[in-house]
Length: 293
Length: 219
Image 1: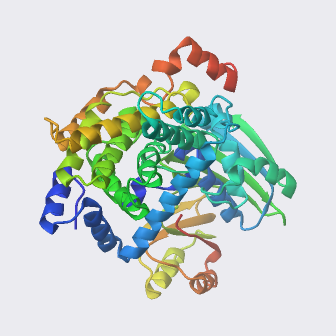
Image 2: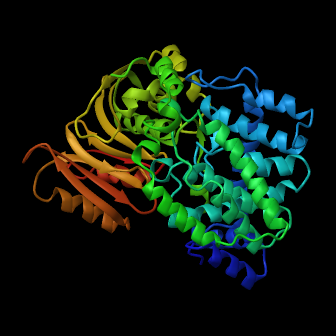
């Protein structure tokens, strides 16, 4: 059975079995959970279906969060995407999907924590986008979540997936790295290319702090899901082009842990620093919760 | 840890600790009450007290008290649903000294007059720790099937229960005893591996030292 303690282990095992990472992980998890492969696939498909419905729910232009600070931006992005924007329709629609899922989360809608609620828009923004625009089959998309999940397990074991422990790099950074690996697999890349994509996504979010305004999972979390999608795609594209990360994925994850440990407490989900402590951040906090007691 | 801990859980947003964990704390309180609640007083301490409105923690705890799960889309409307069903619920901001930042103390009164006070914390990622039931301190997470046994603090009570469980093939993973005072009311918290059947719980309740026994299934 796999230990999920290094990305290198996953790549080596996939080579030995001459299979995709997703197939390796599905087989391994079925064995360790003592459940049939079909049951595990069914559970993952259920999660994929929740991601799809969260995209749909979040596109409602009337949607507002409980705090009334956010909502409705996914609808704006979706409308804008029809013009093609600067980056093309696909990327703009992917950004809209990430906004939709994150805004739906803030509005107490149903989501899949992937790996956390704060970063729940990144896998839907990437993997749901590829499936719903015909770039892969639905089955392949569901399977790619096993690859994403395995990369997440390694990050959880070696570093952290929690903003309170490791800053936003641990949440949106990890989600983006997981998504980058999934995209590469869906586009026919090798396990090594998945690892390079993961490494490049982490490198591009290293040091990202967790500084939520009013302590709520809204500002800046929702928009960081969009940049997480953009970084996942750009990292995957580089890997698919044959570009390698000079620093291996496992060492990038180690660096993420070290960086996370040195982020001051004020910038780890406590809402005491960064954007939360700006005059506007403080005014928005007052607007929701009233004066500090 | 498995792949569904990373791609999952399916939950109602916005925050695993302020919503998903809060629902579970409400559910545990309802389960310990043993009947539908008529009145609830929810004390919120620390970060829960400061941010519950923005995170919907009040809606989440209410939903749990009404028996909803953490992926139930009615959570968003739970305050209205509670009012419609006649559940009277009040929220009190407080400071419980020394408690985890995300702590709540839930006092429930049931439709037939049952009463329970449950204290617990949402400790991250939707996980919880129940720390108090009535005046007794406990410690369980709800991740395992948990059997709570109320009994009088008398010699042989623990042996009777654990021997019965061993005889029924139930493996105990964790055992904790708390009591009000010597010879007074006591509570066993027994986390077990595998399933515990309703028949087994009935047999357990018929043991002499046992006053009341509840099974809280892993969630």
